Length: 252
Image (tube, rainbow, N blue to C red; front, side):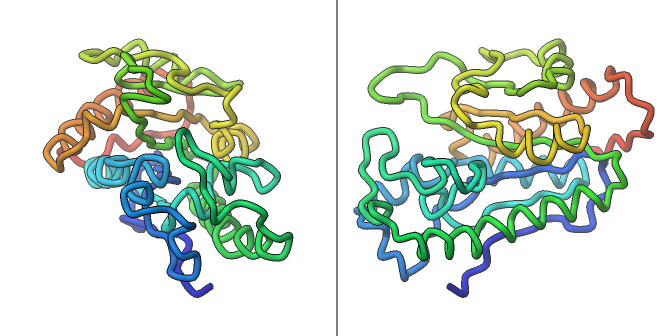
């Protein structure tokens, strides 16, 4: 395994927000033989979060913030899941069986953890530490409009675990979309691993933002969504009772 496990965008960014996009890429390294999937499945939403990385990059540029991205498909290793979670290397995702994840040996499972998850986790920890305890953790995801045949009306989800402060502040200022708390997923679905490991454990403000992927299909849509997110995050942070000085970032 020689593939890069993590990508850092705008590494010199100075904003207090540190952006994370765990499911930025659909790339499946050659040795996994597409995990036994056909091309359409390997490029579908089960393999990555379409539009999330492009939106996150525009947001990182607008804020002058660091963005950390997972560099391989979530089906190879889902960096928003701990190693002990079945969802870290899922055998099935929505309607798709993942043959290449069936009956993974203990050795191969550990190799994926060591090569893809540990470097990602270490990069997030290193970047947050460089902010000297003033970081704000924001993860960016997207979700499919139809899941298991059911249409989803929610357009943007604002997700949190045990610390709802930043989510509360965003929900007070965000508008223009069907925006819901802890939808279409919540802590009970195991989606807040990054928030818990790197946010709650370090006493950092944190939130996960889920965007319905039909709203971010083009670069123009991603840019426009990033502008909304930048406005909401900047205003929400200004309302939080936090003593650390805030950098409102570059104007878009």
